[in-house]
Image (tube, rainbow, N blue to C red; front, side, top):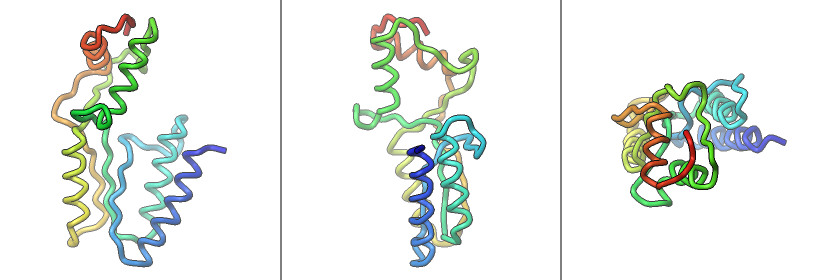
Amino acid sequence: GDPHARAAANLANLFDAAAAEGVKVVFSSHTRTSLDSPFSYIAGKARAEQSLRESGANYAIVRPCGIFGDTPAESILMNNAAWVLRRSPLFLTAGDGGQPFQPVHVRDMAALMVELGQSTDTSGEELDACGPDAPTALELFTALRDATGAPARV
């Protein structure tokens, strides 16, 4: 079965338990979620968001476009991209690569989630968590390729 659908179902149970206990949930989702996305990861995030809204829990949803940090453990997305760039002759982006990509620093994401979790006055916040820079996907992955000395064509 689809592991993302299974994760969304498990999260629905967790959200229901949080609602029953009066615990606020701060959920890290993804930008541009859609129940009809052809990507199971994105559709799974959308199902989890829907379950959270329907659970009755006090909640906030934070939607990062990507997360990066200062160490390899904090930059899994960029490290995975660099790994592919170093080992493949071609690195493909969606469309023409002109889509803006605004990753957020892991500590900024953590601070936002803590702030939302500590807020008791509101519920139902749904925020995009995007960094201040907005290179296109082509610019970002070309810069990453150049920084790593990778041979891939982007």
